[in-house]
Amino acid sequence: MIGIFGGTFDPIHHGHLRAALECLEQLRLDQIRFIPLKTAVHRPPPVASPRQRAAMLEAALAGEPRFILDLREFKRSGPSYTYDTLASLRAEIGGSRPLCLLLGSDAYAGFLSWYRPLEILRLAHLVVMHRPGYPPLTDTALADLYRERACQDSRELALHPSGSILLYAMTPLAISSTQIRALIAAGLSPRYLLPDTVLGYINNERLYLP
Ligand SMILES: Nc1ncnc2c1ncn2[C@@H]1O[C@H](COP(=O)(O)OP(=O)(O)OP(=O)(O)O)[C@@H](O)[C@H]1O
Ligand SMILES: O=C(O)c1ccc[n+]([C@@H]2O[C@H](COP(=O)([O-])O)[C@@H](O)[C@H]2O)c1
Image (cartoon, rainbow, N blue to C red; front, side, top):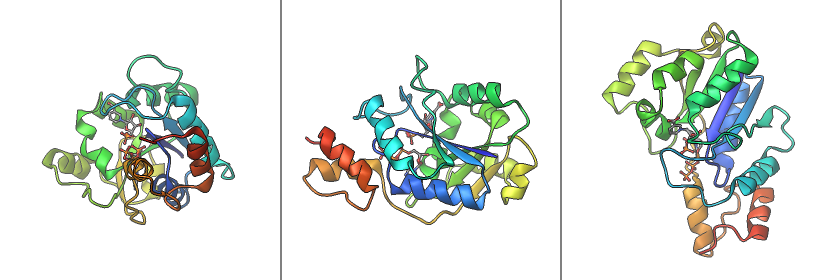
């Protein structure tokens, strides 16, 4: 099974990395593809450039060969829709191998307003990772969708290429890129919230300063 972890990664932090490692091991994924978005459809544009976000991801993923940096969204023009990304991956790997789209419970809260959400579920499973402060099933429509698609473990995910939703209780880590950017802008250190190598890059590039 392949995990897909899309995000802004502005910057990548230990919340992302720990989430990915726990999914990799506990769901027995073969690899996780980290896919930074180019043109956000749902939020203001990132502060760091694509080049800078790719460099930070590269630094953070070094040393874990099952974490793969996948820059396909940078190469596409127009909005970075997840549906298009999954369709391009399916064109490469075929229809039978299970794909698991990893997303935090804050992202799942907006899932039904994404571009072609039900078609996304035809291309991949969803793994919703619980993020502190964002209970995953507050909305009725999302709770209904979950009830129709719920699955309990990685064994069940492996039975089909797509279509199920797994709620995953990862170690709760209330870390966000917003918090890291705000600390730096305030002249405070974000150290230990993200890898030192990523912080070194941020300092060299003078990123996120006011
Ligand atoms: N601490 C965390 N725990 C679990 N999931 C997370 C965590 N941080 C981010 N995610 C998930 O990772 C994906 C990419 O997140 P993103 O790059 O937007 O990070 P972020 O910290 O939410 O950034 P920002 O604060 O700029 O919105 C999303 O699915 C998000 O829900
Ligand atoms: O395709 C969509 O319509 C869509 C709408 C909102 C978010 N997403 C994706 O969800 C992922 C997490 O987004 P974010 O803002 O938490 O970084 C990222 O890969 C986005 O491209 C995708």
